[in-house]
Length: 377
Length: 239
Image 1 (cartoon, each protein chain N blue to C red):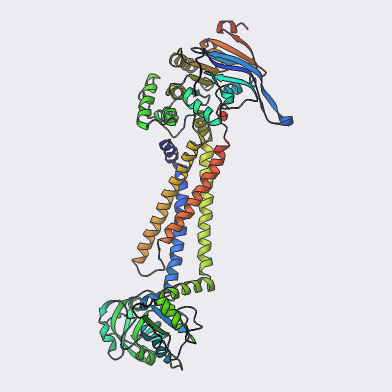
Image 2 (image 1 turned 30 degrees about the vertical axis):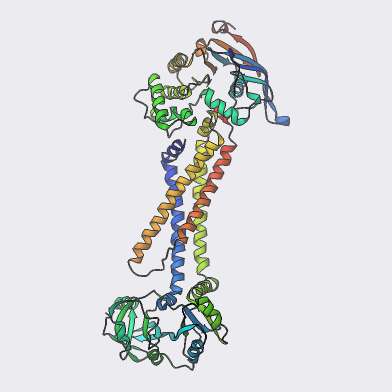
């Protein structure tokens, strides 16, 4: 009877199209908006991923990676003194102003790497050489910066010079890096040179990056460093989640996207539930005839569930497929806030299963109450 | 479930059936009794609201009774569970409805094969059997037509095919000619009698269409919830 159930569904083209479109739209809305939300959250953690250190040490009052409370330079030595530290290096992070050749300004995310080791250097260099970062006035700029300058008609390439806070900077390499939340290009240089570019302050150290010795886990090292007064250590993973939760708690982003996702669920329930109910209602007479002809309630239940989950599966596939296509299309044009981890389609699948179950239950209540004798009326 | 061989296919004895409760309670059957034999076409006739369709419904087990006994092929329907009655209906009863009740999104052959599919027959075998029955009904070549593409008479022939495809022993027909013109109604009844009636089968037809009374072997006359008489067709015209 499953074949009969599917024929009844697929050949009722208007309702079938309505059901599939409703569920596809609902899936698209939820998947796309959740992926954009995840993409935005990934932007907030770009620095963690660009630097890639296993343990981050910061002022004890810092709550997330984009919030910098400068520390004294001596904190590097204090961290190095903790048992189990393989190495510890300074990191400078600050938003500075770059002046371009045409006189216009651009905010940049200046990143000062340990001069000796260059720990935290960009992983993917697309032009130039990382070693040249030790040359005078040398900086590495990311592709986001190149694109931003290009949009203003300025071609940025290896050898191009510009100014950071009135001091000369020369591009020695171009790299790929994750886009920051506010969209400023990442400009990498050595820690010592970053101190020259940055506006003078009494304390200028943003973070201490550290790695545990073999046999010591990052978590264990974090708990040891946390015994020091005035600083707080995090594993990269913990800082990643602290940063995301900070943005969820302190910004309107989750409410904005959450509202759209809830709207998607409501639209899905309203369209799919109502249309499926109508579909069952229109077929009640035939379902009653099947009951009279000997169809058991279990058979009719299986038929209705198959119909509900078939449209759910097709609508979900279309919705998630369209979102993936949209994501690929926009990702090919830059770094939009779009990130679809496996949890997103799984979450949407669970919601679609709920919507289909809800729709099927509404229909099944009607079928269960159906007296086969109505066929004689 | 085993049952002793019987000569009477259907025995209805003192059946009472009411709808509603309290002050709105309406008695549809007030102690109706009736027997239908194997190999006969029994018509149940009477004015509107006399309880014909209710009697038909209790005979095929789609309605419970308040009082009385219903025995079909020796099985007491009142003593059977809902599941057992459903199974019994699926195996032993074929239905022909006034409005045909063909599923509009299924073709003629798919509609006709439904009783076999309900029994768990593979689709291919069920449709082959249904196509053969449709061919016998003069619908060869129209197997892949949807109900909307068929005339009323053709739709009723598909419905008859659906009622017969699983070789049931009891055929229940509710106003089979009500939606058809006179000529088509006559042809449909000829076809029904010719193809449905066998010595091991019983056909019960509820109708108020006097033009088809002559197809009956016997006619049960109902009035006010009771069977008030059973007549031969030739006698019934004179009642």
